[in-house]
Length: 136
Image (tube, rainbow, N blue to C red; front, side, top):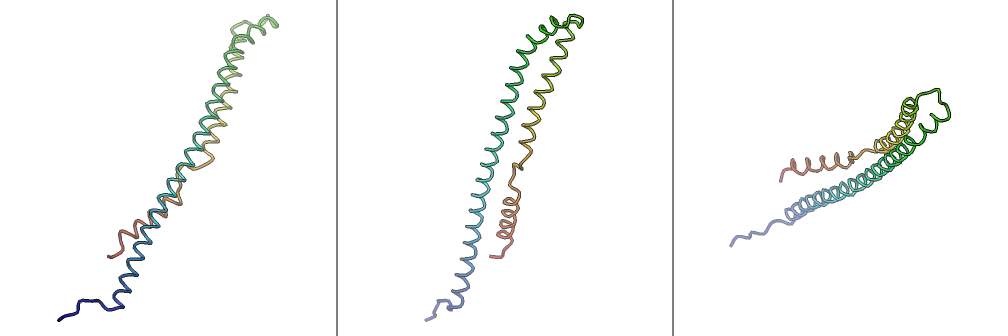
């Protein structure tokens, strides 16, 4: 009667290879979890930057509306030598510059971080490549 049991050294190698494969799979799962967490954090930062930009735009619009209506009329009254249309143009240009500065600040905040977690993605690619090229 033939004995089909494997040698103890064969069992050790099999267990070792199985352990390595399981560890590699767990590492890939953990890297996917890290990638999800980093993407979530970057989306949070993006949302914060968008809120700052929206607030800047709203403030600029409100200020522009009030000043465009009131300030040129006041300036035309105070300096009657300058036509009313010129005062409206001057005030409009100043408000446009202020609003542009607020939007620029929001864009700068948005550009202050990289929305893609490069290191995690690269490590994940390496592990997937290792997992798929390892002989089984």
